[in-house]
Structures are given as structure tokens and as C-alpha cells.
Image 1: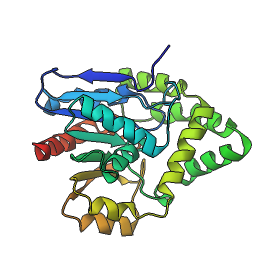
Image 2: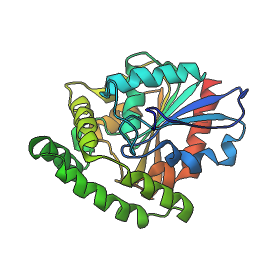
Image 3: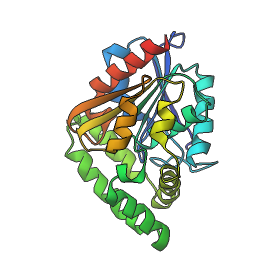
Image 4: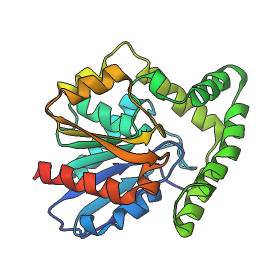
Length: 261
């Protein structure tokens, strides 16, 4: 039986630098495979984990964003990770690690949504409808997601792995996970301002044309004005940042590690 918080680790055990990688919704740890293989991260200990309920991993424990952040912070401590990288859902977990002061190092937030308007309206509708009528809207979404991956500019072996992982997702688990996620970003808080005033250095990465996640004009202005936040824009439309833009992602991680040093 699979375990929650499955780990995929690369790099030397005695590496001076280690990074915790948190995948996006419905994805497994190996969604970071291409990033982990980038030469700029050679010699770095890279620890990717599958979040509970994602890609068929068991749904157990507290899977709210604060609950996931607590366990992720423990993993970061156990593996001596000096930086944390999160994509989409995983980026929100990384954000909470910083805002709750459970992690003080640099963070890289890929495709993060700080408020519901940043998220795709279709996705929000699927989540909220599933909470009312049952998980079948998510079952439809999971049938459509492999089509999006097939059309993405991703090497075939990795593309096949992503599709395999997507097919392992359970709609009922997704309703619970994504409902908690939307409730978190819908809270009456100014996450951009909180990140800007935190003591952690942060890299916020988005595609030039909206892909997975986005920023409102007000959020962008707040982050641009913060000396501890760096905004990075990837050219074009990118939905799966670690998979479609691994080189750019790895370069940002290398910058974060240099800050940690």
C-alpha cells in the first residue's frame, strides 16, 4: 500500500544545500523530474514529496493548507532543506509555511493564486459544484486533464508519467483537498501584503499569458514594491511550470539557494 507524503530524492546525501519540492494539485513528486535533472542544480539535494490525496496517494491526516504546511515544515527540517519550492497547490502550502513562521528560508512560488480571482473560474466552479452535488464534476475534469497534458510541450517519457499520475486521482479526495484550498485563499486576508512584509525572500513565478494561477494588479503592485520579493515572468502561456519550463524553474531555484547561502 502506498504511503502518504511519498518521497523522491536526488542528489548527494551529504550535499551542502537541500530543497523541498511541493507539487501542484493532482500531481506526484515525479512531476519535478525535469527540474531535478537540470545541470544548474547538480550537487543539490532535491527532496520532492507527493501531497496526501494527490495522484492516488492516501488521503490522511489534516489536509487543510495549514495542516499540510505543518507536515511540510517537518519534512524540511528533517531533510535540512534551506529552501522550499511549491507549484500551484504546493505553492500555497509553501506560502503558509512562511506566513506561519514554520519556515524562515527562501521560497519559490510557482503559479500561485493568492485570491480566488487568480484561479481559473472553471476550476472554482468544478470545486464548488462538486461540494453541492457530489464528486462527478471532478471525475469529468480528471478525464479532460490528460488531454491538456498531451497538447503541452513536454518530453514524451515525462508526459506519459504525468498522465499516469493524473489517472490515479480520486474525485472524492479532490473535492476535500480543493475545497479546503479555495477556502484558504478566500479568507479575509491580504496574502500579498503578508508575504511582502515577511522576513523570507520569495520568488513568485508566473507565465506571461495566464496559465496556472495569476495575480491581480493590486497584488502585483504590492509584491513589486517589496524588497524581499522577486517577480519572474516566463514567456508565453504555461500551465505546468515545472514540466513545461524546467530550465527557467531550476534557474530560479538556484537563485533562491544563493540567497540561502
